[in-house]
Amino acid sequence: MKAISKSPVCVLLTAMLMLLSGCGQNRYAQFGGYAQGGTWGVKANLKGVKERPEAIQKKIDDILYEIDTTLSGYNKASQLSRINAGEEVTPSPMLLEVVEAAKRFKEESDGAVDCFAGALFDKWGFGFGPGMNFNAIAQGYSCDKVAEYLYGIGVKDMLVDIGEIYCDGFNPSGKPWRIGVDKPTDGNDKPGAELDGIWESDGGPQGIVTSGNYRKFYIKDGKKFSHTIDPRTGNPVEHNLLSASIVAKSAMEADAYATYCMVIGLDAAKEFILSREDLEGYLIFGDFETWASPGFNLVKQ
Image: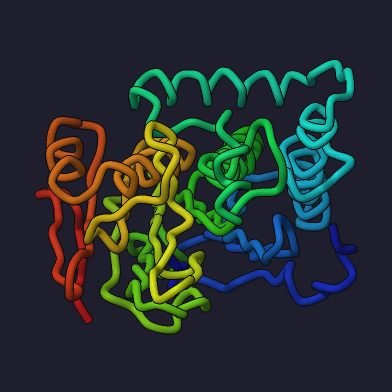
């Protein structure tokens, strides 16, 4: 998924550019950096915001650094990694918050979304050791935490892109935010390089996340093994659902439910999405056939 439009801050000297807009006194700024193994970007309307752009950039960096040192399974010094290694660690409020969310998603999904089944992902070559694995919700949670900070300083129009996306309000042109939905072709590793279509927001607060089996997989003895593991069976999923894009009130929920859809497969995913008034979804399956819920606003290219 791509928005259309811990490294030092100095690598992004161009990140804090004020974007001139024709919409009254709106003052859009763009921020960015590196986190969670990739780049992140934020666009925000600073109309009425007292904090200087430099301070906003630093605070977002600080939030993402805290998430990395708390939840990352790749950072061996994080609280999660230390717990998984058997150390006695006093969990921070952030870790407790995410653990509680993970428990809720596990219970709600009857075990299909299980952040505590890290050993299964390690078994199939997609993990980083036994214990917890927050990959199904961590990036969405990161978007929500950055958005929470932006709301706190008075930002109303924003787009937060940290691999997953949270948006609210309108873009510098005064129009709803537009997000590209990647076409799930094997090897499509660059977000935005090949799009199936473009989703347009309704101007409200929304998280949008795509989960799929086209980037993380391997082929052994002629068989494709997906990184989507069904914790209930202990095996990679085997169905024709290629990707699931979910729109929810938060990016963490969209993240978890997109994973859930990829675990349960096409028919069950359709039924689940339609049963939830707070969700919209877009599924790509088979030979790139598509299905969209009534409220998923996709503009085909």
